Image (cartoon, rainbow, N blue to C red; front, side, top):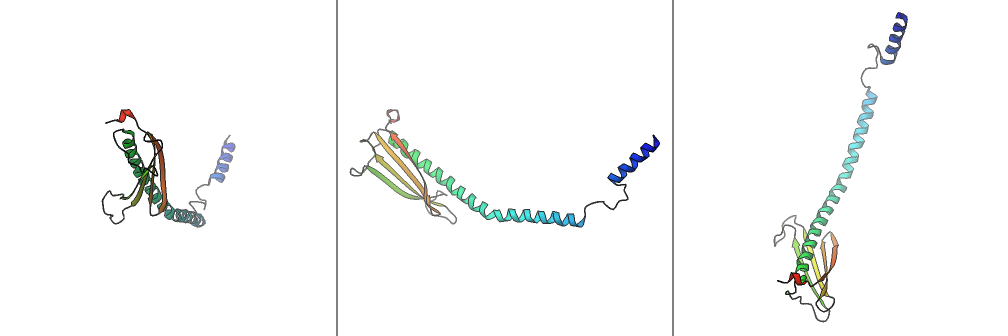
Length: 161
């Protein structure tokens, strides 16, 4: 039994090290490989930073433009739905159109770094004053096409005021 114990002890020391082994800690090669991998990872993240800034700017403009467009469409939709509000369209083209610029800050004059949006709204009479097509477009200098949306709106008696 003692011989078996002694043999197992030697076998374990051979596999685990007996404390006198020179295999303690990490080697210089392992440190250099780890450092190289860390540098490659950091450089990869740094190279993605400009694209992230550009995409966050685009997302910011799209969000502001979508808010402006939705506000514009809701305003004119409520006006069209009220039968007491006259919608004056051109008798020849059956349309009414408005274009103006708005700043993201809400101020009348543009401030440094302010975002300027161009808002275009068109109302088209579809059937003699009962239903209308409401179209809106919001664009900005970096995206002259912008975003657009249209609605079909009918006069509604319950909106009469």
